[in-house]
Image 1: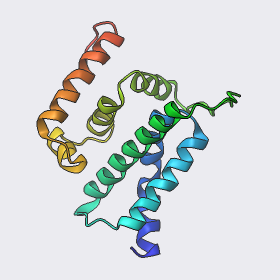
Image 2: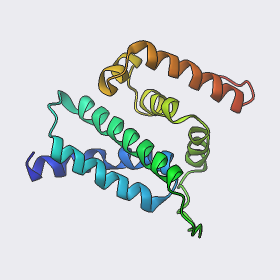
Image 3: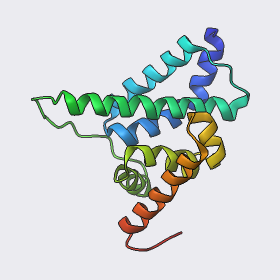
Length: 157
């Protein structure tokens, strides 16, 4: 992949990838590192993607998978120094509320919710882009909705 194309993809999709990473990792520094890693993986693998929608989908799936592997690694290798660093608040309080809701979901369900609700992908597209069976994606979507309904106290949109 040439530099110009990579730069164009970065400018178009870096914000969306960052939001996904922040949802999983919870810190700006870790999320920025994850964004860099996702675009490095794009550069190394140079996948054949059809259109902007597939490009964005590939980046989001890769970001989710990378973040989940980071979380598994952290669980196996806890850090002794737990000094907290204040995060930059979201510009909109509704963004913070959404991030908090998403953080309450299991990792596998969170990916489906982000891609379906936040990014507008159909469940079939999510299955194709993530390499999962359509029934698995539908099941995760069902469980995510059920969990969100419980978190919200029975309010369903």
